[in-house]
Image (cartoon, rainbow, N blue to C red; front, side, top):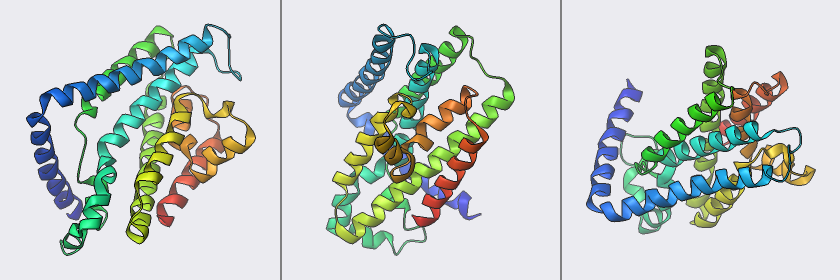
Length: 247
């Protein structure tokens, strides 16, 4: 029952945010075009790299393209859901968050869920279409069990992303510092546009355990490509729920 009420509150907030987007159509279109350029540029980088080499640490061009597309899909999904964190600091400093604590909603609702970014919806449609196209083009389209398994691992990565955002929001309440942490997270995110297995031991350790970008992006892509081992599945769930309960 509580979840149904929270979804109702979120739908009201989301409707208001969508109306605000319609008030500035030009800036919204430019923002979408910028995201589209960034998406296309990421694919261009992959094709340019494999124009010089046939494989990178056992990954072929088709596999690298799918991993890049899955990266974009997960990034857009989490940005749509958790964009509110990026504008939480002014609300916190003004003291408006204190008023939210009096409301019968979870304390993490305002800093995490109160500003869904509907400008990511067009990109999600494009990315899903591109992913389906390249899976068919490269003859990598998975069977139903693999798709369901991918969705479970995908959702696991979303939970981990929520946990990281929640930890950042909690740290912001203690220190009023949030922008730098978010930018560090976003910078590390960009490392997953290619398979994180290609990095050296130190940086790979950071991406696997300190800020587990690998679980969010690379592990779901491996699941879709049937490259994920049983150890990888166990590792991803342990990392996610460790971060979840810690956050």
